[in-house]
Length: 464
Image 1: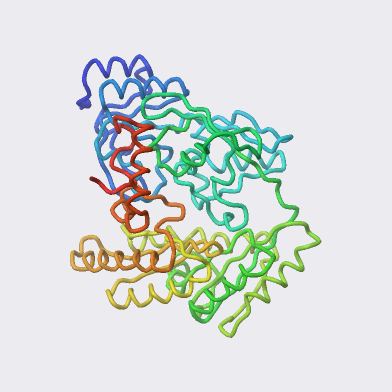
Image 2: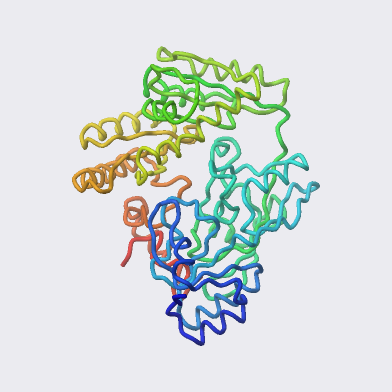
């Protein structure tokens, strides 16, 4: 057994808090907790598995005393390296804090621990006739704590909003070990600053969430799933703007470009046309009596000179097949390019055609294959640069291309991340979007929450 290099007295206190069976110090055992889905890695000194708020509070107090970094994580499904322990120290796994404390149907509220998976919450809420709107593609594996840390939303955000719009309150522990109880149990409240929404999306750099009070939404009476295919990307992008400009808001509006369609066809049994340059997957929900009108409204908006086919999935098998197509995208891309560069940029919906056209030009200029898909209803496009990391020349071109991708997004009045977060992947680019004064205040806020800088250090902001 190869132990960590943590001070002996620190390790003794750690055992007092967590007991030996909830602590890993062997390098081989700790290895898997040093990376996330970005495939970046750093070796932690130890991994601890928390089961209570008080354990986490004591851990942060102990790490403050010894100035040892802490990186909190759920299931490691993030793609930006935000849970990679760059300065070693302690990885705090929250996966065992997986209790759904209560589903309060009368008030449309769920209270959960951070290690509950998104799917487990959806299943529990559905038994009471509700759902929690955020639904990342990794819902079966990702945790609520991770959803909140990144503000990860998924397809339904176009109608129902992100975690920030679907949370009421939090219990958390700050970087100096102080307990915070913020927010409300009600859907209205304006007492004090909104620390709840500040902590959501902060990637564990301000505080560690130990409990969340979430706003639930009643399940719709009925849903319809639609698919429209286009001869080219521009036609699909124009259709997105038209769909979002009419009153019947879809609950999901997904965009898949031609390159992505070809890859899905190669790695799944999806029934997709050979000549499609792009595809939209559209889901609408609401009262059964209104959905025929909704389908017609969406079809009218989606129709333009580039439309090849518009169809509705009529059976559960057809519906499942359509969503399986969307969920097959990331695995298919991983097969083609295991270390692809994946950026989830966002632009105003009306600028999607400009973004897609700009990306096509950059792909040609830098000779880098780019595949695009994502949540088009709110302009959140996942831009995938398919590269071979062992090809130094290609990687150099990809880095130059990515630089221009970010510049294009900012020029279109967009933002560098919609739901994947910043982590270390985009850390060195955020000062293009955030002004110096705003960045300065953010650094001060970080210092107030975490004076010794032990919570998830070297993330989110450019290094000084």
